[in-house]
Length: 468
Image (tube, rainbow, N blue to C red):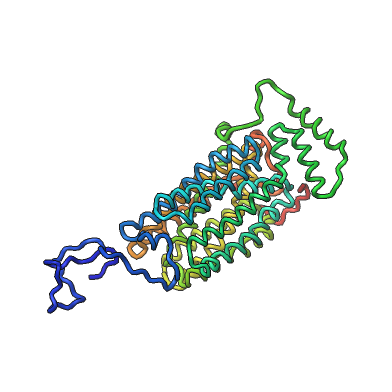
């Protein structure tokens, strides 16, 4: 008799007094709620834009649409900014992504309808992934194999964990979605300032033939570190480069991502990483977007799940250089998908526990897969290659947003579909090569030489001492 989205229209627009006021006549017509809705504010004690604009019932699709528009922006921004990163440098791309993200976030507090809010989400999406991925690439290209795992994981271990744990409580005490948006502008400003003083990637400069600029960058880093390098080494570096890469008429060191398609092993590796990345995002949305898996309050749940990033990163630092990237990626994706499938058995406390375990495995999987993919893709197309992987992740996120919108009371598909896709992604990862202890591929040829000779070989307690 009761419905959240419809109401009865009594005959002659009057309700007979002699009838039970709680028992309508089934013969009456029904219509959409004409007098708005009353919202329970117990769990979240402030109104969001969705509440203010009544994005419920017929308007509930606006939630999925605006989320998807965010990923559409990320998709488009990735194509443009990754090209900029490989063509004009990592720092240029970092600056561009931060500026666009700043515009999107600054517009958000003034977004009073779905159109303007969608625009703000689109602009935020354009720079969201790219604002951090090019910083990530710069760090990756500045360290040798011995320090890669620590350098790539430590920022997530400390800064990401602290900010994500704190953000739900900042939202709770501000209790205003517009002020929450204002607060998130400040990290972008910090990132923008840091980018201005960050040296360009010398590895990218060398890979694209900008040898003189690479030497200038190394000199700048030398001064920052207060170290001294014999100038003769720079001369030898330039001589060695020109000896191995003699100038050729019409030759360009800049490559497009389409060059990946011309090399069989590289093509297989990149698309394999893309499938794994998309599978991770499918499982992530399956775990996070369906509230029936959590028995806690929303703010406590968000902080608790964010806190799993710390042990996940710590475990990566301790195990990645022992067991290798490949099998840790497979294990994290497979078991996170398994927790999602098992959570369909019991919607109570067991599912909440499995959701926390699944989030831990998701954090582990995202960090290790990002490093794994970056180590597979050559320097000359690393920005575009990671974007290609990210694009499939965006598409998966868009599709997953609509999958998890299914009513969990009517169907288990919001958990089963992402879970099955996660298992499939883990199987695909078996085909990829191990990167532990190997130098970063610089050229397309070096990237094409990376292949897995023994699919089921497991590196454990490797005593390689050839790390940089």
